[in-house]
Length: 441
Ligand SMILES: Cc1cc2nc3c(=O)[nH]c(=O)nc-3n(C[C@H](O)[C@H](O)[C@H](O)COP(=O)(O)OP(=O)(O)OC[C@H]3O[C@@H](n4cnc5c(N)ncnc54)[C@H](O)[C@@H]3O)c2cc1C
Image 1 (spheres, protein in one colour):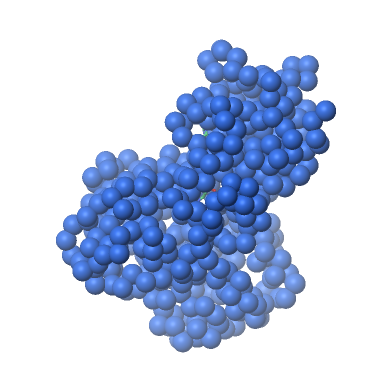
Image 2 (tube, protein in one colour):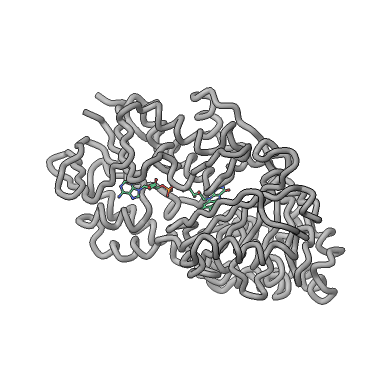
């Protein structure tokens, strides 16, 4: 019998399971879909490595370095840092400025917007910082033009969300801390930009390979095609069920599920918080990858990619130049573009058929990149839950949830709906949680 049951084999569940196993626990994992990895899913065909979900993690994450060493997987670092992006404005692509001096000379901002940007050190502090959205924050410190032309596309491109709905302190605690400490952000912007300019990492074969390698370390104790709908706690044991059939029991339970699945599985324990957890469900996000012969694309497509203009309410959020980021992901004569569409800026986009998604994506990127002809290959993936949106009040909800579930012995939860978005946060959380585990008796 296992010491620990983990529900969900996404990044959060696999990371926690790995570090629990290293701490000496016998771990059993239950995953609803046919493959481990959750949103980490990779297709390898026709010489392409296509990432349907995350494309990599930011270099320097200890938990991932340890896991890759444990699994004998070589880390591949991107050729370009993720700050080397373009911002689309009025149809054209402008380099994302890398510091205050670059903002002052960028053609993206007009002279009034530049003056307002440069007055940032004089900005007031917020009346109630806990409730401030990213849009309010950017307007207050940098001005309206900067918010519209730079912050809006960045937030849509990075988090598939609108700047007016995201909580600044929940999403960017480091920036809030720097504001409190230094009073000005432009003074430390260059240092941040340099710190942020780190490579993105993956492993040979892509993130699907990492997920499968992690799952394989648990042998037949990692069950795929095994959804769970109920967890029950009785006399020191956690029992898990699907449609009334008991699947397993263990002393410890870690729930690393999307919020709606967690709300269902723990319905008897969440009380009045069940609805709030359910509402954390991430909006739909569509990933469209397309390959073209290099000779059919005018733009050099060098750098990380671009954030789409938000002005015309386009469903396109961002485009990543995968062949430039990881050159091995495409044959030499091909350009591989990964396009993100939907999220809260265009929540219904995922209702389109795959061919409609392809057609609309092409319409959006053709003029920006000077594309001629049709793709040599294409892939469409619809994520029912894309990237969670941390709205104002997020921290306090997670605190309430932690307090509520702390009443039940040996119950933990994880996942990007709660503890930070992205692979760095998911894997770091698993390592930190693993370090709190006592060795089994
Ligand atoms: C298109 C896209 C691009 C992204 N790009 C990046 C990027 O480049 N870099 C980055 O760091 N992050 C990126 N992210 C975010 C990142 O993918 C997530 O933050 C991270 O993968 C979340 O992992 P998780 O384990 O919390 O959730 P998930 O990966 O969703 O895992 C939850 C698991 O639970 C399973 N499950 C659901 N219901 C049940 C049930 N009833 N019983 C059992 N199992 C169940 C699911 O099948 C899934 O495997 C991206 C996300 C998307 C969608």
